[in-house]
Image (cartoon, rainbow, N blue to C red):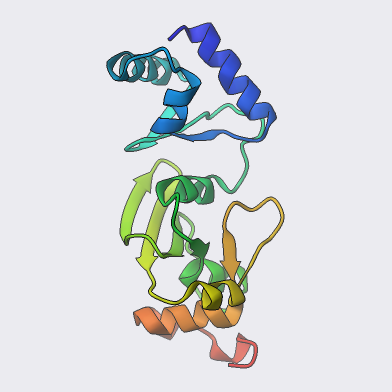
Length: 179
């Protein structure tokens, strides 16, 4: 992997608004590299500051012009690619002003994929598994333009919080629409 070629490829993806990559995405950008060569090249790019390894198998182009405030959501989307995921629980309740404490460095995500925590330099992503049918999930969420993940409505975020049974004491129930 040539550094100039890598910089040009990352710049092209930046122009399209993409700055978070899975390892398999980067392997497609550099198809002639063997897995070992790719790993060594990515390590060199990380040392040079062109890429940042944020967790296992996920890289961020930290100097991208398209870099925005949704970096944690973009990382979450990559980590649970193929699963249905949406921002909910404390993260959404804080955005709606329904919860008394705002999670500054944590993103809470409901997912049909596996549960887990992922610590990144940008904050912690907490995945909580849900078994709810897809139609129910779609009905309780909405898509906001330029946001990588769908977001829960206030009622859905409250329902999810009750279902997982934590931090209920932080919620101002009077602020929840039709609660």
